[in-house]
Image (tube, rainbow, N blue to C red):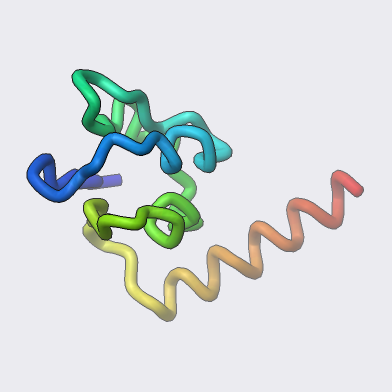
Length: 80
C-alpha cells in the first residue's frame, strides 16, 4: 500500500496510530509515519479519524473501499 502523510498537515495527535487495527503507524517526532504500510488492509479508518486530513492512500477508490468493508464484515462474522 502506498500511504502518504502530509507532514505539514499532520498535527501529531496519534489518532491514526491508536485506531489502525494493523499497527501501520507510529508517531515519530510528533508526526505519523507509516512504518508497516504492507500490513495495511485498506479499511481507511485512519483516514476517516484524521482531523487534519493528512493521510493519503494511493490506489484505494470508493468502490474498492466498499469491497474491503464487505470483506472486513465477513472476517468479523467468523470471529464472533
